[in-house]
Each structure stands twice: as C-alpha cells, then as structure tokens.
Length: 279
Image (cartoon, rainbow, N blue to C red; front, side, top):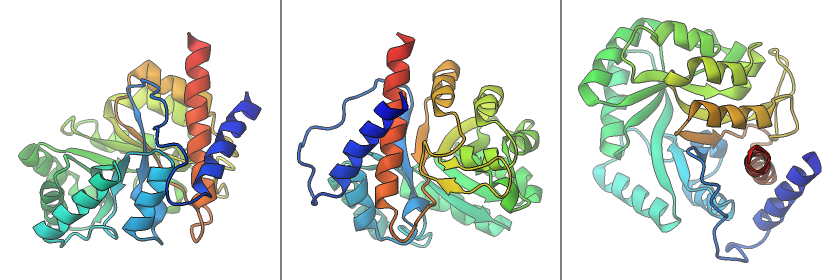
C-alpha cells in the first residue's frame, strides 16, 4: 500500500516540476468525500499570491485559508475584490481567514470585521485565554465559526485539542478548533482519538506529519512521519467531518514545492486507497 501511495505522490511531483500549465487540463477525479483537500496560507509564507495560486492549480487544490500576508487586515474593499478575482481565475476559493493572533479586544474587533469584509464565515484565531468571553460575544454578533488553532508544546496557548476543548466546551457551539494534527501529536496526543472525541468542535484541520510525539518531533512530508493517516482519514468519515483538510507544509519553506506535491499526493492516495478498502 505504501508503495502505491508513494507512486501517486511521485506523479504529482512530476506534474509540479513541469511548466505553468498542467499537461492534462482535466481535474483530479472527485473522491466524493464530505471533506475537501485544501491549503493553509501559511504554507506560502515566503511566496506571493501568484506563486501560491500557481502551485495550488498544479496540485488541483481549490480551497485556501487566507493569511494576512496575502491579504492584509487593512485591505480596502477594492483590494479584497481584486484578491477574490485572482483566486477565481485559478479556480480557488478562500474559505476562511487566519490564523490571526488576538491579544486585545481591539484586535478581535478588527479580525471579525476583516472576515466580514473578506466574505468568509470562519476565522482561524488564537485569542488570549482571558479574551474568550469576548470572542463568545462576537461570534453571537457576527454568526461566524471561530476555530482556535492549537500549537503543540511550542507556546503556552492551546497546546492540544484537549486544552482547546476544555476552554470552549461551555461557550457558544460555533467556537471550536482548528485541529493541527502535527502539533497535537507533538504534545503527546493522538489526533485520531482527538478527532473522534472532539469532532463536534472541529471546524478546520491542518494536515502535516511529524517525526515524534514530543517537542523534539519536527515536520516532514506527509507520509514520512509517525501519524497514522489511513486511521485519520477513516475517522474523518466515521465522524462525518464536512470541513477542509488544509495542508500546512512547514518543511524547506524556502523551496517547499516538491514537499507540497508529495504531501498532497500521499494524502489523496490514502483517501483513495482507504475508500476502496472500505467498500
């Protein structure tokens, strides 16, 4: 099975290293899953929007979580319209904004108004713990979903899914988490079990792989680390997850493109092979 998956990844790698246009204009076959493969904007922290969209087009990825280095929080309505037009020209939809860090009520206000002007109904955010009651108020006011991004052992805020759950379980049900499966793993957790346990509050997912379940574990291409992706994909189906699974590639960020293609290829290969196995 692993050889089959790596073969799929190799096909996508070869596509990515070719010219601007795909050799075959036909899109990748629909897997008919309730969830969609997407891309986290942070993957392209060192590249402009044009390069981002070019890469997504070559990988047949059509959903983007928008980072503010591609569309600043102070963007004008004209700039936002031009941004969406550029995404549309490449067959990409911006489905959320973030992660956005929030250390004051003013920053929360700005983030919610930004998301409203951008035209999305979900914010991936990292508010200080003491600001959660104010986030609760804003979610009720705007009718947005708010997905708190967890960060593993690297920072004290929201280290894993359990921590997010404990802080939001008594808040508005539209406040939940962006389950970063790599960071969750690096904090000693099992993202498969956490998805099952907390799925009612999982609104977004960041896909990555890591080498270990401690702080010393680091990001690698999907399929090269310790995360059990077949089990994770099957759990997505079991809980009926309908959101996005966004690759957040954090390896070789000066030249990430081969790793992006390999990771997307492997993840799609897992989706395809586990679907066949479950029939």
